[in-house]
Image (cartoon, rainbow, N blue to C red; front, side, top):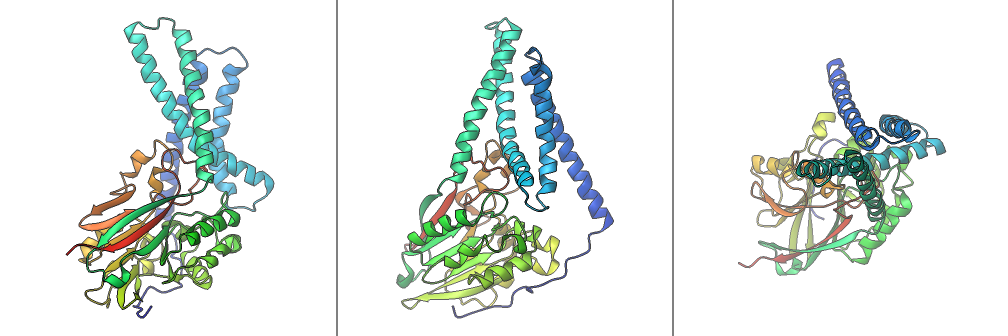
Length: 405
């Protein structure tokens, strides 16, 4: 590790939030809650009112849906308070329901569409029986799907092995093994014991380089210092490297960068290192999160700064939390051979993977964005709902080999 370029300041004063910004945030939150409330009302009507269930279900069902809806904002509020038993129970309820809500909503919509087709075609003439059947099918699909998603999210990560040809990679580094973990989200429902299991999986792969590409935590350093200690046990022959994600900046980005450095990881904040093996070199650069500059201006993501002074003719690996950072790399005219990103979780819970494309150019896997080759990680942990329906948790093992010619 021979080179270090100037990076962003490690500490920065948090900017004062303006009244207009606070009002915009409240209006946005109000819009989201209104939309979610309307969708919950739709579920309550389709499941409990349309079937004309006998008392007490005809009113108990809508009350239950209303309470589950209220658990979402209340759970968000209590997450910032002392982690008492009741607060943790409420958090788990709100997180599980947030994921189950999306699955149940999808099931109800599909059941309604199928039921509409059956009704119009005359296959089913009894409206009451059809309504009850739709409700039973929607719930019957949702419950096992949620159980499966919970087991998947909390289980061992799948090791995805990918071979990546890289132009200019000298023979001494051919076969270099880069193990990437991302979107770990240690916090209310993922603790240090779970993280130690991840670390043991990574170390068992005997990596040459470990890349931790952001969204490590959901909480402050004071609250989670003991939970992230297993990171200090990560081992790689050429180094363990870390870049910030957007969630670090929700809980003190500079403080987390300092804590991760204290644990022995190399923190790359718009800077780079050059590693060497058998006379062959590789530049490993890292940028702060794509949106960090909105919170701390001096932490704005700057690919050009990260690679300033990097040796010419040496392959370049860039760690950037969000895949769309590749667009900024292209804008800056910076040459990068491979970018490692995360952020998307692969969509995490059906049907949300279809919404990720509204923000990110790619959801998962190896792709080319604006001429930049990017590997987008599905995430090793999860955010919010302790559920994964579709994309399983991932540890990526990327083997770099010399490209022909």
